[in-house]
Length: 552
Ligand SMILES: [Zn+2]
Image (cartoon, rainbow, N blue to C red; front, top):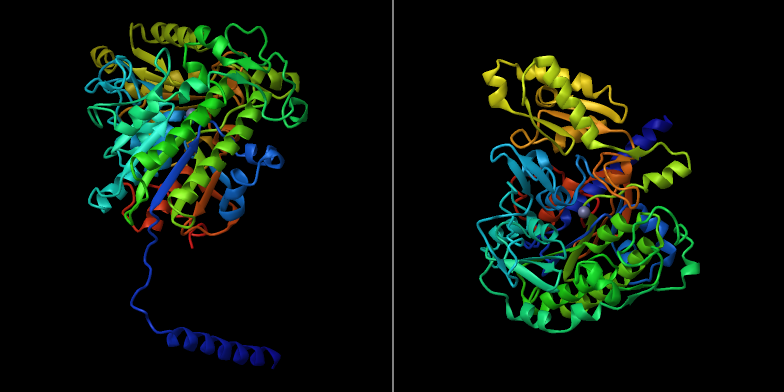
């Protein structure tokens, strides 16, 4: 009886709700998409998620905390592929897919078609603009799919601009996409200038020239000391320890660093990249770009991608637990505040949308982990390569079956296999079995395995999503946790473990809800989410999903 009453009461409520919905007249002006004047897509190179929580109490109100307060925080956001490197990271954030589809399988990889090593952003068919260097020939041509910025260009009949900025060329070039108006990166050495390539244009725009002619870069060749009293930096390890590399010409890796005095022994202007000031210089240049390119000035959505590279250089040099890393993030927080304030005044609060993520995380320095009994180590690639080559030669009585061992992958010389009637599957299985005996190797996968099934969880799934049928090798191996191919000082990254995969993902501004989630999200979800916000076609290879809880 009681149940019946509730049922009837429920039906009444339901019918009232339906009536009220039906009674709302259609305005004929439903919003089917949100068009911010500007989208700013930011990547913090090597930012672990826990930097947000670890340094939270030390941040000001206008940077990271503003994003957390006004925007949406995806607390359980991960890379869903390996290797977690800079090139693949930037490509995956903006294409909404993984190396399996966008083809940026590493920063540098062995190209089995040309039989030589290639760099993810190198392009011999173009030339540097703003520098005479032969080393700055860059374009996005190795990236096979479009970015969300490309789709915005197509959607707006090329009226919506796309500009990419980062100290690292690949951090500027890959996000801005194939159809970008410009991508600018920092040429250090003896030049200290922002440059581009003939892929985009044949001269530097006036605003870039003016920026280069100003003393901005020069002004950062100063003493780098901690922003606050170093004794208050209780969220990081001691400044003097055995786990940091430091700069050439300074005996200890301890504050303060006189960048002007150390410049000549540390590749000239490159020393700015390796300090917290590289991010400040990036913010300065991004703000100059907003004016120079008139971004967000009309109602057609423009795209600005900014990658803060210095966090990565500092992490590699000093490690994730260092005072230097803490100071770099406290200063980045100030740079973000400055950038947001500039966006407020130039574009207007509520007229722009920003997101912030990373291209990968980083591991605690293994030599430090060993002091606290956490399993970790240093991988010696050459030893493994020599052993595998010798084993294969002995077993098959044929020379040269292996062409290359690179990026934790074994590449076969197929012409040699064919000539000697060696089955590729036999060779894969034999090598996989042998490699797994090696004590620093945790897992091995063959090309055959990666092409026949679909892994849905664990490292296997990440290996598969990082595996590109055309570009990847024939046997892929995975190192033990916290085991790295790196020096005994400083941190690195590249694995499918949580210290490398767990990255921040914050959204803020027009069309974005306020809140947070611990639901799992992945890096390829970012571009579809921004595409849905803008009502544009997803990047052509996108495999991620829209995050509905982020959007209003
Ligand atoms: Zn990186």
